[in-house]
Amino acid sequence: MLTFISIISIIIAILLIIVVLLQPGKGGTMSAGLGGLTGQFSSMFGTRRAIDFLSKLTIGFAATIMLLALIANLWFVGGDEDIRKPITEGAELPAINPNPIQPIPFPQQPGE
Image (tube, rainbow, N blue to C red):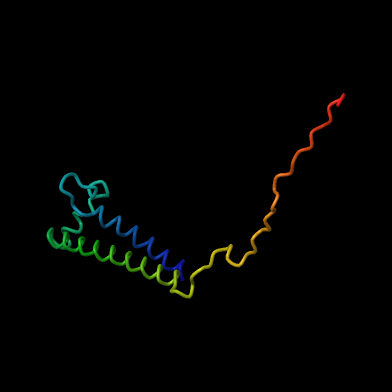
């Protein structure tokens, strides 16, 4: 299920990128570099309706991506019953050595 949601999210994200690039900008637009597709939308819908259509499509795609991310998060994270315990919980502590440092015997000097 996560794979399906991820694939749908990726497809919608690519479509969102395309729709954003098709929208006319304040300066030079990327739509001219993409073959002038905005001109085709403008001739089909009219200039103002094409801009409204593309902006509503952008909002719809963005909302769908956010909804899919929320569904994926709630579906796979789960509720309180899925709380993981630390690995060290219930493990035995190592025995403490009361005398960890042993004295080093000095070699006998000749003549002592």
